[in-house]
Each structure stands twice: as C-alpha cells, then as structure tokens.
Length: 457
Ligand SMILES: [Zn+2]
Image 1 (cartoon, rainbow, N blue to C red):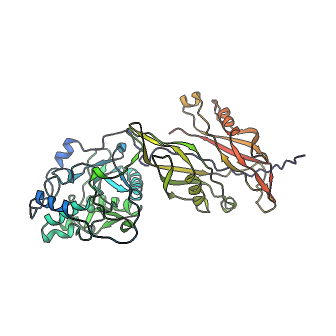
Image 2 (tube, rainbow, N blue to C red):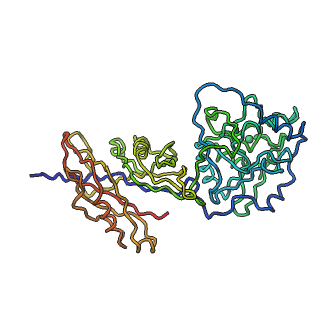
Image 3 (cartoon, rainbow, N blue to C red):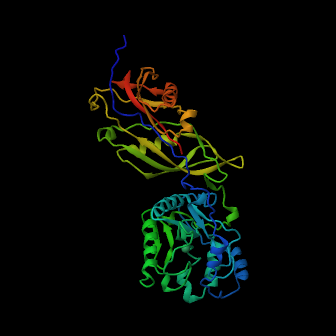
C-alpha cells in the first residue's frame, strides 16, 4: 500500500503574480509632448553665437570618425522613450530652434537610453510622482557627430559645458540624460536655479544662489536620480550619467538608424503573453528564515518571445533572487506586437514568495523530512465573467496532495473568493504537474498548500 505522508509544509509552492504593465505604468495616455503655449513660454532661452555656421560644422562632423576605443563593451540596447503614455514629457530641445545654438541639430525629436539606464529612470519617475512631479527629458542618447558640432560651435571660454569629441560624451554612449522636473498638476517645468543649457555658474550643481524653492527642486531631482544609480555632473544640474557608463561604446548612429528598438507596452504596443512558465522554488534558507515578499525583475521580452537582459530591481535575498531569475529565464512568451509585427518590449515582473501559517506546527525540514514538490507545469486560472464584472481580486488558497506521480489530487478549498473563482482555481491546479517530493531519495506523496492569485491590472 502507499503510505500517505501528510505533511503540511506551510509553504506555498511559489505563487506568482505578474505585472505586465510595462515598466512605465502609463496613466491615461496623456500627451507627452509640450503644448504650443509651453513651447512658446520656453522660447527665450540661453544662446551662444556659434563660432562658425552650423551647416558647415555639420557637414564636417558627419564626415569625421569617432575616436577609436579598445576593450570589451556591453552590447548596446537603446530603448526609445516614445509610446510610453503619460508618465513623462519630452522636450527635445536640439530638434527645435529652442537650444543654445538657436537652430535645430537633430532631425527627429526622439530620445533613447541604454536599457539599464532607461529602467532606472522609470523607477526615478515612480519616486518623483509621489511628490507630485514628473520627469521632463531634454536629451538622452546623442550621436557622436552632434557632440562634435557642439564642441566646434562653442567659444573656448564656454567649453566646460560641452564634451570634447576626442573623448566622446556619455550621451554618445547612450547612458546620460538631461532632464528636469515638471509639476503634475500644471504640466509646467518647475523653477530651477538656471535654464537648461545655460552656460553660467548658475548651472553648477552646487550653485548656492537663486531662490530657495529652485534649489529645493534641484535637490528633489538629485536625490531621486542618485537613489537609482545616476550621478549628477558638477557643472550642470540637469545632466546625469548612469553608473558604469564607460561600459558602453561611443555610438554615431542617427536616430533613424538605431537598430531593433525596444518598446514599452502602451500606445499601439500589446503586452507579451506568458505561454510557459517555470516556477521558482523556495530555498531552504528562505523557508527557515520565513522570508516572504516579492522579487521584482526588469527584463526584455524579445521579438522571438524569449526573455533576456533580466535584472534584479528589488530582491529578497536568501537565494530567492537567483531562484527567480533562474525560473524567469526559462519562461516563454507570445511576443508583444506593434502594427501586427512582433517587437521586443521592456517589462517588469514580480515573483511572489509567501509562507502560510499552517494548522499544524511547521516541521523544520531535515534530511528525514520530504522535500517540497516543485511545480513543473502550471496553468493559469482564468477569471470568471462574474468576478471580472464585479472586479473581484484576491487569492484562493487550496490544500492538495501531490502524489508520487507528480499529479495533484484531493484538492480542497481552504479560503475561497466565490464568484466562480474557487472553481476556476481548482480547474487550473488540476492541470498542474509537479516533480514529486522526495524522502531519502524516493518520491513520496505530500500534502501542500497553494495560493492562486487573481489580480486585475
Ligand atoms: Zn548632458
């Protein structure tokens, strides 16, 4: 006979809730560009008199070659800021005449950043939102030839404010951003100690003059940026380099030749759908220490539906971060689509780990105790129509026995949600398969508790 070992492990088999909101959390698709009135208000900016005509400098710069760089570099993966809904504004000054040269240098008003810097900026935006601000981006990736135009056009005594093309700018590497804050209520840029690109000491990050409110805005921006790994340039309050910027090579691609853009979910870009997911397991360490919570990951789902560039945003330690990354690496997706074609998108995922109080005292696992069964295949529970209409969310908790064959049986509801969701949870879990628990190397049946989360996004 099959002796049933009834262990209540008091542990969910790593239940996931997945946020497919994109990293941007678009609010309501509010326009990202400045209104004509705002544009007009910003018209009278700081100007220099170019030492030679821009058209002439441009023709020369396009023929010149960036400095040779040696070593190994990170693969460039520029993410474009467009299609992101209302979480920020773009005011790409170099694509208009409203810049320190007084004429456009970019042909397109677009902004790109290397993926890790982009993801970090999205997190900064979440932080400043809490204080009623949004990020207003003036410039990000800048092709090298534009840096050369700036340098050649700028008089000697102002060159501390422009990068030497012989070294290249961190903007050329795609990991610098020029930005300020705007007021979420009015949509207007906040007052800062100087204008953008103003080539005077008022631009210095430690400039002590100006109104207190202006310095306070500068401090808010700086604290939020630094908390996510950006470093402010000492002589320009608006300029931030992302850490390890030198890992990327100088690029000289015009915006219309940036390869394989990575999109964000939102306007016209659908979310990727999880086809197959590998479940992460609790580590013994995390179980003993009773660690719970969510591991948050940023990643790109390629046009091929495979996840890549997985990075940890917020971890739990105790081996759970590594375990989450290992599992998510094996997920497959139906790729996101734009105009019917598969495209790569940047998304965030939360992997949840939760421990449950058990009815019986939780046994400390030892070699004599069975291991936890591991979920091999998981089918997601569907929302019932009724639950969707009534916007019911929460978790259904089930007890079940995982047999030596890895098949779940004796499924019972411990805590239900009603509205048809308990039945949906059971229906889904019935289709799961497990690697059975083991004791002394042999598969054994065990009783476990799982949580099936229903969440509307
Ligand atoms: Zn800059």
